[in-house]
Structures are given as structure tokens and as C-alpha cells.
Image (cartoon, rainbow, N blue to C red):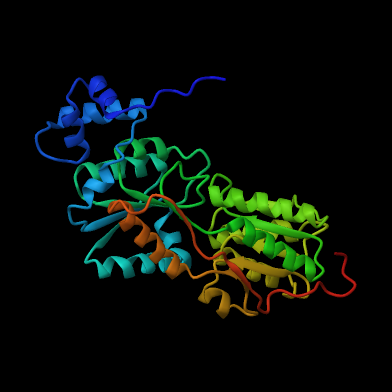
Length: 346
């Protein structure tokens, strides 16, 4: 058996950077006495060695945290229309307000820009901690942000978050519940309109969808990966419903795509739910205002945001370093789902 690699220590970082152990500590705790050039050399050495200063978060508990950072890699127009993030941020703000703390929100174009932004915020002492979202499989942000020593809480399944303390929902169980519900209604051709394939939570839902369909003896290959916009949802829905053996039920990864899907069904002369059932993720006012109202996998997104913010303060104060699972999304049936039309090929 191969011997485990020796654990990298602060002394190793100091030796690599050619400085004292005290200088490494001062650099990562952002204290005076270390020049900018030396500080950068220390950060580079830590990154090369893969070292994370575990004491950084505890040292922060002795100073006031006034600003928390959140960077989101989404177009501004889409974010403004997406109910999930509006509810999520309002939950975060509830907790921050009680601590006289502010949220610094920035939209970025890609993950490299996001990583650079967090590095700038942390080294300039702009933020005291961060909330990391939209994890990808093999997420490229993780090594750099861990080496930086940034106190952060990750929103995502622990398998995706690279050891960062995390808060997550059980998307796999919720996806399986959605499939079992539609199968119980009599549907045999069920399709899923998912978010980008690279996103970790989309991949988890895709695997759970395929597994649940296989378990029930259904065809689980009908999955489309796309963006989260209404246009993306409409395009994917149109393609699925134009197929010769079109599905009789569709599951969407968010509410915006589901609402767009309902419009496409109407445009094609299909009756919801007689000709096609629609089921959304992330229940919202949009789902309740659509005609017929959309069935959805519901969870309290506002409370989710509050749990994430509380976990972040736990990280900063050195009292939280684990993984917290919040309530699993549960099915809320409404008028958009029902048995397939009698006599239809299912």
C-alpha cells in the first residue's frame, strides 16, 4: 500500500516562501508588517503546496465582520427574473441585518473572474467571509480559494464542495419522488429539462432521474441539458414535444423554464395536464399564477438562505465546519399534473 503523502504545514510554506512562520501567519490574517510582494510570495507558496491555514477563521472571530461577499456567475437579466435567487438572498439578508452586516453581491462572467474577485475582496479586507454557490463537478475554484484561507460556506452537496463547510438539499431524493409521483399517475414517457450539465446539482438530479426511471422500468434517456432561461426552457420543450413518441410528462429544473414550457404546450394545441403534465422545481409565485397552476417540488428558499448565512457566521467564529442538510424539497401537486389522457399511448 502506498504511504500517505506527508501533511503540509505552515513551516513548509514559510520555507518555500523564504520567510518566517510568523510572516505566514501575518499574511493570512491580513496584519501589518508584511510587504505586498512578500505577502504575494507567501500566498503563491501556499497555493503550490496546497496548504490551507485552518486557524484563519478562528482568528477572525476576534474582529467584527461587516461585509459578506457573494459572486454569482449568471447574466444580470436572468438573475433579475429568477425567483430562487431573490428568495435566497432575502433569507441571507434577514440574518445579516440582525448582525449589522451587509451583503456585497457581484455578477461575474466566468469562474476565473469569480476566483480573482474573491482573492481581491479577501486580500483587501473588503469582506470577512463569502457564500459560494453553483458548484461544478471538479470545481476549479476550490484549490485557489482554499489556499487563500477565505472563510466561506458552500451551497451544495458535500461531494461537490471540496471540503468547504456546506449547506445542501437532498436533490436526489426529491428527484426520485417526482418520478415516482408521475409514474403513479400512469406516465411511462417522462422527460427532464435540466440546467447546464456542468453544474453539480444538475448532474445529481440527472443521475437520480435516470436511476428512478430504471427502477420503475421506464425509459430514463429523455433528458435535455440547457440554460435556466425561459427561452432555453421553451426551446427544449418544443423539441421534446415535436418528437414522434413525445413524453406525456415533463420535469423542469426551475420554475421559469416550466412556465415557458406551459406556453409552448398551449402554442402547440396541447392541453395541460390531459396531453402533457408539467412539474417544476423551485416553487414560486410564478407556479401559482400560471394557468393551470404548476405542480412543483417545493422548499422554503428563504429559510435556506438564512441557514446558509448562519452557517457562514459559524465558520467565521470557528464553531461550524461540517455539512448541514436542510429540508428536502417536497411535492406540491397542482393543476398541471394528472393522468395521461385515456386512450393515449403512454
